[in-house]
Image (cartoon, rainbow, N blue to C red; front, side, top):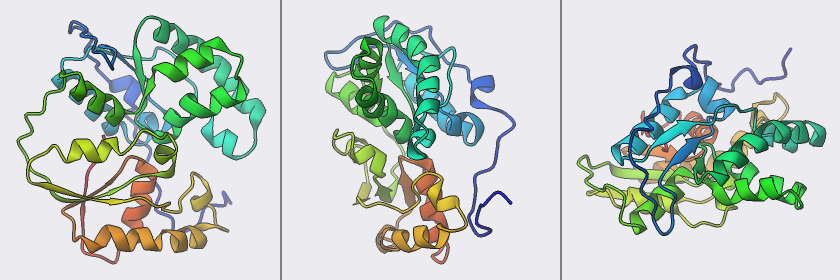
Length: 270
């Protein structure tokens, strides 16, 4: 009835939403670096808020460990990427009118704005500025928007990241999702993972085939799995202890595609 393929493994909805349960710590003194603002505002995203709030909680823990004061964006709507992919530009504009005034105020107050979903980060960094090139607030938000690992690697270059990693990860197969690659910021996640002692990272830089809601649909599920087969194979070849992707949806897709392999651990990124 919904057009969702019966074999697609879907994420659950969590009754404890991230925005309802998050306890950000804003008590630290902000320490600006040459490359990074010293305080962070978290844009929750629909996925983290409703499906995997643990990703958001992990991000808050990392920020707190590094004594970075953090807050939640006080009001948010969907970033608009799902509507953009469907060509519904009017809905994109409506969501932009909800999000941008709030985010622009935070940008002007000196916050780094962060989302834990590459699609959302890309929407604010690139897609909205292309759609609304004359909007000064859209530009301000784009300049203040960071991917989490981009922020942490730059924080390390500022000499302000704690790198006292104690637990080796062993072999990690890491997938770079498309919406992260087009941000042209390099492989920041890999850089940070390789700072962890006794950790070897194998990077897979190829589309996994899920593509938002496309890979969920009955008519496209089989194609999405076919497109993903080279990624599933490359992720498994290293016999990793952990698999991970910056995109949680791509990660779930890869995990399903590797279902015939022996059970793997997965790591949330971040």
